Every structure is written in structure tokens, then in C-alpha cells.
Length: 301
Image 1 (cartoon, rainbow, N blue to C red):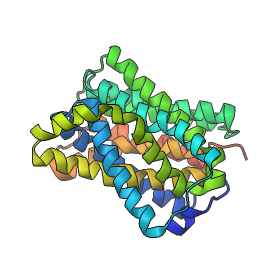
Image 2 (cartoon, rainbow, N blue to C red; image 1 turned 30 degrees about the vertical axis):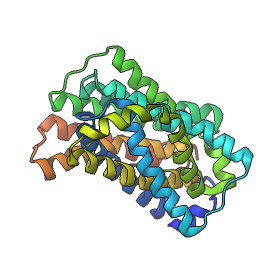
Image 3 (cartoon, one colour; image 1 turned 90 degrees about the vertical axis):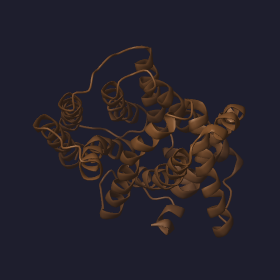
């Protein structure tokens, strides 16, 4: 897969086994990230938490670059990547961490679930990635499935100022997914991801003094959680996700984000013994049905 990442692939809009595998690997890592973030927020404030996570990711990727001698993109592409990384890395993670401090988990889940809708709208307008009526229906069905998951888990829904921060995070990550198409065609998904995460870390250095203070009081469990977040849900997961976007487009790839709550339920069941109720299971089935509809009947022939 790494060899495929090094070169750009034409956007086909159709899933193949390699693209699907990359998406599923990403979703497993991202679903597992919620536990790490929960542990991290007990000992770090949102900005330093995001900086710590992406410093780990950046160091991981810099080591990879030095070993593989990955070439640096041209200056115009670095500017393009840098602007996108401010939206999709810096702003997204700081806003999401900040919002999650003051809104219930159910509210955050519902708002983040709007991300694929925003992505599909932007991709339809700016990237020519059209969904037909069945595609939009599948998107709505999946969103309804996420709502059932939230209700089935007994989570409260409360739209406050923090909810606006989470909504802004969903918007910025959608911008990041949609507008990377042009530069992906020139530099390939691997170089894009490496430089996106590194450049996206730079604006977060404003939190370095606060991070230095909070590091001293954090227990080993918090450091382990942040190391995991930096290597797996950040460095590796962004590589596989960008690889999939380069092959099948942002709207199709983002439709799979509705699978993430289902994976989170299964992980909580397997690892924490949290048995899902009937409504939660129904919501998971509905969300998966919507994803299936988008990816089998959701695009113009």
C-alpha cells in the first residue's frame, strides 16, 4: 500500500479492495481515538492536548521521511498543503477538543455525523463528485442511524456554544477533505499526509508553554494515551484515509464515517463489556444500510 501511496491515482469514485481496506483501517483507529481523547482531557486542556498528539505524529513521520528519503513537495504545493492543514488539522482538532469539554457525547456524535453531509455538498459544488437522489437518501438514512445510536445509548443532546465549536470542526475537516484533490494529483497521498500533519502542527505551537506546564502533572497513563493517539489515529490513519480519498474521492470516502459509531459500539462491547441495547443495534444497522446505499446506488451512472 505504501508504494501505491507514493504515486497519485485517478479518482474513480468506485471502491476496490485496497481502498476499502484503507478506509476500514482508518475507521478502526479513529473509533479507538475517543477513549484516548477522554483520558487525555482529564489531564490536558484542549490546545495542549492537540499539540501533544500531533507532535508525536510529526516526529513519527519525520523519522519515516528520514528513513525513506521521501522527497519534499514543490513550494506551491507546500503552500497549498499548509493552508489545508490549518483547516483540517489545527482548527479541527482544537475546536473538537474544546467543544467536547462542554457538550454531551451524544450532541458531539450527532454534529460530527453531519460532516459527511457537508463534505458531499462541498464536493458536489467544487469537485464535481455528484451524488444522485439515492446517494442523498443513503446519507440521510445514515445520519438517522447515528441519531438512533445516540438515543439508544441514553446520551443527552444539548445544543450549546460548545456545539457550535464542534460544528465548526466538522466544517473545517470537510474543507480539508474536499480541497486536497488538486494537490493530491501532483504529490500523491503519502507526501500530502506527511506534510499536512507536520505543517498542521506548526500553528498549535502557541500552546507549547501550556503543554510544558501540564506535562509535569500528567500520569504515565495520559502519556501512553497521547503516544497512541499520535502514532495510530493520527500518523497512520491520516495516511490510509488520504490514500482512499485520492482513489475514490471525498464524498464516497466520507460516507464511511457513519461506520465509526458502529465500530465504537463494538469496541465498547468487546473491551469494556458495555452491551448495546436494541435501539443502538438498530441504529447501527440503519447507519450501515445508508453507507451501503451510497456506495452501491448513490452515484450517477
